[in-house]
Each structure stands twice: as structure tokens, then as C-alpha cells.
Length: 57
Picture 1 (cartoon, rainbow, N blue to C red):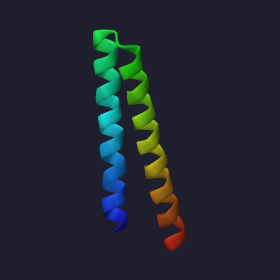
Picture 2: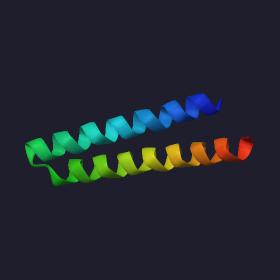
Picture 3: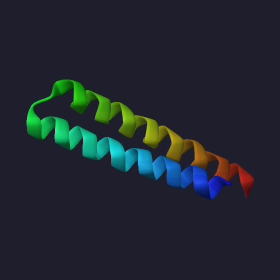
């Protein structure tokens, strides 16, 4: 279960970075901002799962 949530966080981070780069490339500030938001969401998910792992052991 935790592995799938970690993978989801990584996927969200990658998706966000891609969207941010595409927004920057085409000059679309909104897309760039959405990419940063998705990346931050992925970062938060990763941090949450790492914290769970620390307390699990």
C-alpha cells in the first residue's frame, strides 16, 4: 500500500516538473504555475510517506 502511494507521489512530481517546463517553454504562466502546484503536491506526498516509514520502524 505505501509503495503505491510513494509511486503516486513520484508520478505527481514528474508530471508537475514536465508541466512546469512546458509552460515555461511556451510562455504560459498559468501552466507553469499549475506544474509547480502539482510538483509541490508530489513533494508533500513523498514527505508524508517517508515520515510514515520512519515511525513504522
